Image (cartoon, rainbow over all chains, first blue to last red; front, top):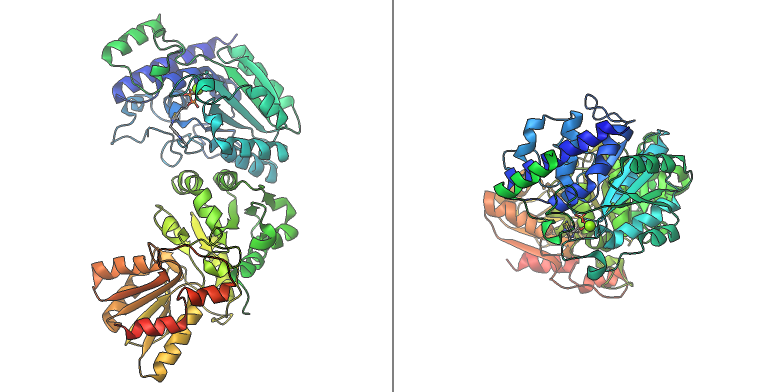
Length: 269
Length: 306
Ligand SMILES: Cc1ncc(C[n+]2csc(CCOP(=O)(O)OP(=O)(O)O)c2C)c(N)n1
Ligand SMILES: [Mg+2]
């Protein structure tokens, strides 16, 4: 049923590995874990049009965990916001494809991110603007599970609930890892669901690699009125590349040529 | 007349809000005293109290700006520029979003609340951010014009307002130009370049100096970034020496900005008056200004010390 999205997500993973290998730096783990979420959002859910990227009625996405930029760029290129051939220029001084999303120079990027913890507030602002203008767009925000250690996330969690932002749909890419190790070893974030519920959110937990589950959760979120929805997506960091899966070491290191070849062989199989 | 610039800000925001429906206001539980409450009362649907959460305040404003709103995000200057600096940097200036960061109660004239509340570093910090425009109006009349200009200008801005009432030195029909400093008194013996409520003090000092035969030029440099370089150069060329005065640290603010231009374009002696790399303290604002040397008397002393 979700054949298209499945194929697209597969292509996105290939793109991510090729981009990172060509760049020689970047973040494979969190790009691969967020891939399926972004694929469903951009190819099944979001009302966005590459020929009219500034449409005020479009849905918006804030990639709060900006280091997963390769996954976002892969989706945007596939969607047609810019040429696919540009992807391999990622992180080069001659390229517009910055290491972290830049809304001013990259078509389709709704907000510049990179400093973790700010994206949810920005998404709230977008949702408030939509309400002021009586527009019906949805604002998606994708956060990391380590990212939610930032105090500002909880400020924003409070204000999204306070203002009853039901056109805000946030994800936590719950891959259980950050840079220095397992989330709860570094700084306990669990139970994420209870915390957001206590803040006044509608909370769902799903398998973040199950296309139907992601899709259904978004529909449930849209049907929920008067409060924001958080979708805790249980994911695997490095998903799709066997030697990267659940390996903290693959957070912020690019594969070398040999590793990339191996990864691509697995992904294309 | 003779009211605090924060008061003028609140009234002006409500005024521009009446004609421009894109203007929105956000505050962090200080609207009663930053005076954004005046806007809130007039336009409750376009006002958002974010609670005591300055980081969220700035980044929410950024989100509103991405959708075409013109947010004025207000709180005390010290919290706006220090607590929420990363948000101003990464969510407002880096993406060049049209957010007006409003810092009130700036400088020692903030008074009794003491050093924890008196921003002395805000001008320097904001000035160092790419894309940021930094404005410090001299009085209530100018503050109103600054708010109107901020609503028109597209891009990040830092507006610095004071808690303490101060003398009005402008006529209502004063022709304000955001990017041009204002020569308020001509002279060529020395140039006194001031901003904020130091402008009336500079005018006072010039008056007294005139009685002693020293002809001081007084410049109101309301916009510290981008600074009116041509005017600074003209002051250096035509007056030969410059005194700067600001109600902020003399590290990195107006004085530093003037020195940078003078050093590059027309080197002449410059003396900076400001908070001498110290924090403020409790006391009545007006008294503190005098105690910290932010006074006409001190300007006169410095002018004579060249
Ligand atoms: C404010 C801030 N502090 C630190 C960093 C450096 N940093 C980049 S990624 C990362 C770990 C993020 O972990 P998580 O949110 O779990 O992301 P994921 O596992 O999805 O990659 C850190 C600390 C940053 N980008 N921003
Ligand atoms: Mg993680």
